[in-house]
Image 1 (cartoon, rainbow, N blue to C red):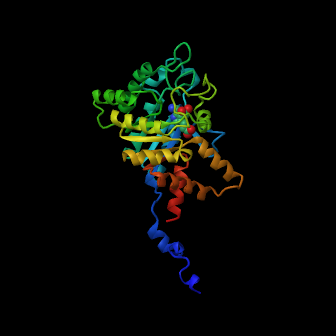
Image 2 (image 1 turned 90 degrees about the horizontal axis):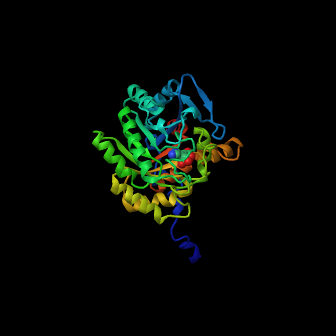
Length: 335
Ligand code: PBG
């Protein structure tokens, strides 16, 4: 049978046959040091609140957060990202609390750096936790988020965080020109080592819903959307344009957000610039995976690891994920 003798021409399954050869040809790996652990922090002491739309995620006061930070280090997770839950009484039109040097974020940062100096601390630069209307910036009479006025506040917010000890400031606001302004403000205050992780391609995504519940900005969000500053999910070239500008303005790292639905953007940005490229697996992605897992419809561990490995395959250097601690434990168990 001459047909059988050269069919198939090439046996791709040979390398997949055994564990050893699958290991040798594996192109991408997920490791604990690819992960960033996001946390929601509360003021006060001994406070712990569940986030209804994110089962397994809690808001914690600083004292309860410290053991988590220690566990992060033990598991080999290099950095933690802080998202504050600001008391409604402290929110106003001008986001004054964002610049309070004794506010929640500066306190958390200095406690973390004091106790765990080797753990990288990332803070979010944006005004939405502090504004009574839930927008990321200052608004005019019509409700439009004003760009330049907002940037003036953001650069001061970055300096407040750097002064408290933040290693990385991460502007997630999508105002124009904020990276250059923040870099200049940091430098002129001698914070030349403070790194900037720019949310360059942050889409106006509906996958942020559970996060807005977690930080309590959902109910406040006046216009109900952020379409005048976050990117249109239909666009791709525009993300390259944004990333190029942010790198030119001094960004050290680029963030793409959300993750899984936007991996084409990750690939394009990584290929074009070759800069450190991070992905944010957002709250809605967490909620989807968790809900299906809790219903017994998906294998949680397998699907979460697959989703993160997909981010790496697309070109991500690091991934911010609410699953970080679970993943680091699973990876250890599977060693
Ligand atoms: C706001 C901010 C948001 C997230 C992180 N920072 C929400 C938003 O832009 O409305 C979302 C993160 C998530 O959904 O996990 N500056």
